[in-house]
Image: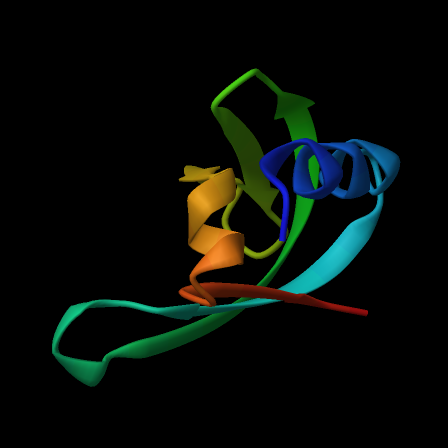
Length: 71
């Protein structure tokens, strides 16, 4: 999968409420709902729905399947 293609896909979902699944360290899986509020060259920023916290992820998180974006 190409980084440019992933970046374009994420950009097309900007402003929408989505469900995310993140596979963190030590097999910790975190699921949350959030809105992609900003996209940059190397990262994108997600505002969580429940507590208004902000998380940032790299496009490589999607390529390596550490992060999944679900509808």
